[in-house]
Every structure is written in C-alpha cells, then in structure tokens.
Amino acid sequence: MNEKQLEIIHHAEKLFVKSGFDGTSIRDIAKEANVNIAMISYYFGSKEKLLEAIFTYKIDLFYAKMEAGNIFTDADSALQTLEKYIKHFIKTMNINPGLFQFLSIEGGIKKRLMVSPTFLKFKEYNFVLLKKVLEKGFNNGSFFYNDPILISATINGTFLNFQMNQVFLRQQLNITSSEEYNNYIENHLSNHIFKTIKVLLLNEE
Image 1 (tube, helix red, strand yellow):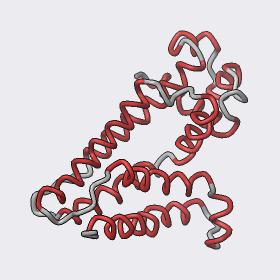
Image 2 (image 1 turned 45 degrees about the vertical axis):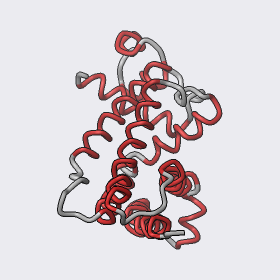
Image 3 (image 1 turned 180 degrees about the vertical axis):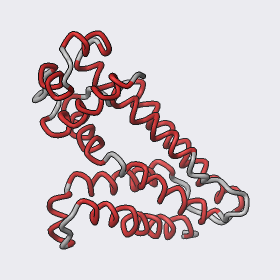
C-alpha cells in the first residue's frame, strides 16, 4: 500500500468514526484527504471497499503487534501467560478505540463487515490464540474451567462496553482526558478482566 492510499485511509477512518458510514460521502473523503474522487475510485473502487481496506489495514497491524507481544514463553506459568495475553490484547485493541466502536455500531445495524472474510478471520485468529493460551493451563492441570467461548466473550464484551459508554463511564470515574481513560482501560480494566477469569479457571467446581 503506497503513501497516498494510506493517507486516504487515515482521513476516511476519521470521517467514518465521526459521521458514520452513511453520513460520509466519497466527496467528503476526497475533500478531507485533498485528493480527487477519481483517485479514491481508482485505488479502492467504492466506499464499501474503502471501509474494508481500512479494516484490513488495521487488522494487519493488530496481528503484527500481537505477534510482537512475546506472549508464549516456556518460563511463564499458565496464569502468567494468560495475564500477558489479556493485557497485550486490551492494549492492542485500545490503539484504535474509535474504529472498533464504529465497527460495533455499523456491524450490528448494517451487517456490513460481520460476515466478511476479513472480519471472520480476525475473530478466528483471536479465538484460536486465546484457546492456545488456555490450553497451556488445561494441559498441565492448573486450569479447571474450560469454556473459551464465554471467556472470549467476557474479554471482548467488557472492552467494547468501555468503548461504547465512554462518556458515561468517564463521568462516573471522574476522568477528564482521553489519555487518562485509555490508561484506565489498559491497566485497571485489563487487571479486572484477568482477576475475574482467574477465579473461573482456578475453580474446581
């Protein structure tokens, strides 16, 4: 992907997050990116394909950052591996909170990306990685609870709740800046999620 394509993607993402998919036109994107409409059509073909290109680009970055996290280390216990996974996953997801909030709204209403190969691959990647993390504990007998689907839903659902309800939660937490809110998510929230799942995994009943 060349520099001009990346520039268009950057400006289109900002407009989609701000105004929604239907509220953003190709003309709006061209004006924001300071390019002509024909260039956007040449590179991406349509607004729908531009949206998928944004998502594909961001997901590829997500994969790279997750792989760089060095989650699996033989010296770590199963719980240490789980904690590293959760903290790195939340931090990586939180790099683009507006985009994931936008996709949650658009996907739930329009179903534009929920069944796309890119989105399904993204969900499968995260699910398989989480299963690998959990299997480390199941195989050595330190974990007793075995439901990766519900654990995955707990992690993703809790994170998205904090993205969807940012205005309300910032008021309740007396947080005034986005930076402080992001720090809360990456530290306090990820620690809460880890402790919650830890209780489930260590419960023999």
